[in-house]
Amino acid sequence: MTSTPALEANLAPRPVASDWGVPLALYALAGFSAFLAEQAFAQYLQSQTGAPFAYLLGLALGAIAAAALLLQGRIRRPLRAFGIAQLAAGSLCIAFSYGFDWLPATFALLLVLTAAGFLGASFPLIVQASSKTRWTQAYAANLAGVLAASLAAPFLIMPAIGPRGALWVCFALGAGICGVAAVSSNSVTPAVPSAPSLAPEVRRLLAASFGSGAMVFALVVIWTHLIAVALGSSVYALWWMLAALSLGSFGGAWLAERTAMRWSTLFQCAALLLAAQLVLWDRAPLLLRFQDSFYLAELSKLGVAILLIGPPAALLGLIYPRLLAS
Image (cartoon, rainbow, N blue to C red; front, side, top):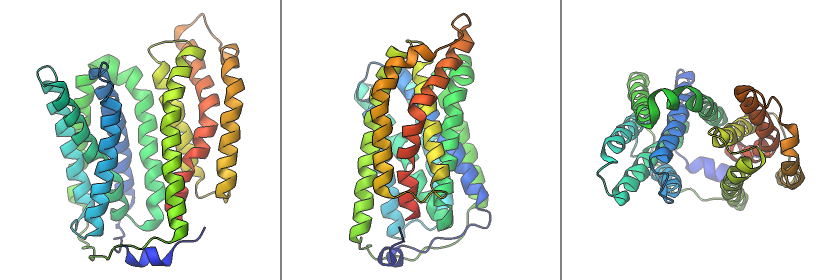
């Protein structure tokens, strides 16, 4: 799929950072912080069914707002704005942790939504601070941070310092990211662009991206229930599902520039793998090993989760970076 000249001509010139590795490293840390904050919020709001919706809505609204401000030329230093957004999100995490006990549930959800909004602004700001060819690398770096958090949180962070401590980690990461971004921020001033005119092929790609996103989050809900039933309910069951999903998505981002698979073939292969899961989930308990050792048994469950969830997650994870590359 070739790029669309009509769209690219109307977008603001993207400054090429002198050291694009700095934005990628910062975005990886942002992915770690965002995942950790999401899980800490979930620990606090276990009885609030609207918590996941508030977090995801905040991510979407933040991304839309940042993209709109960039297209209007109102953000002249995107890397610095990215750092400020991370610091603001970390500060709201601390406010949430200390205000949760006395704040009404509605205000607690509002804090979650606002913090997620600042986190959601990260991607448009990072891709504007990097060259266009680094978009997919930035996405992969963020998923690497998410994967690291999905493995570190259940074993190291949550048992040692709990959800409030995890939110303090998010604040520390936000402050550190803000400091580095302020020092590394470029001085390129984007031109004010006109509103882009989307070609039909771009509209189709955006529709495919929307559909794949809705499919992935629907699958997350299904997999969350299946993993507890098929692999046994344990304190790590949800983490293994998230780790398998993150690993599969990271694999898809890594493959995005290394495969020329057609869009129709991509969706068909993903559908076949999901259909195969209908049979494999019933046989998942037969693959479990080391039942006499708790940690080896849990690692066995992680391996089975990766085997079941990783391949379809990788194919679905190809869609978003392929859209960026197009």
